[in-house]
Length: 104
Image 1 (cartoon, rainbow, N blue to C red):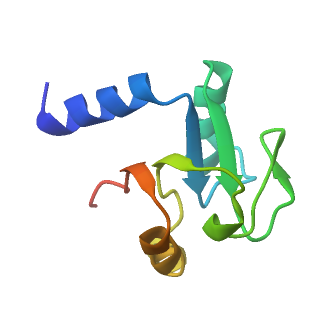
Image 2 (cartoon, rainbow, N blue to C red):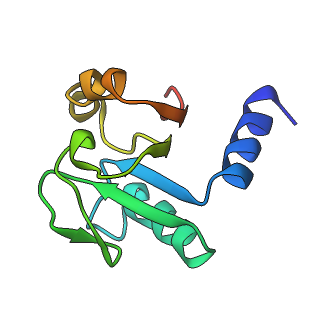
């Protein structure tokens, strides 16, 4: 197991709620299918998407600052341009386990 694998394993076994910036409505995109899979296996997903009111049966929040509870884990599912906008918000809130997309 690599160091990255052990970090991801620790996060996935430590947190029951995952906030996903860039969660998608499109079932063929990983930004939808991965959180949907996690949700089917017991994780609560908090989607952040400025163009949706609800995703995966959960209320969607327009920005990270709109999420009304502490953010424990934060995978960034959006493309690089979309992720740049919430980086200031990320710096202003307390995130226990920030995650990013792997480098291409």
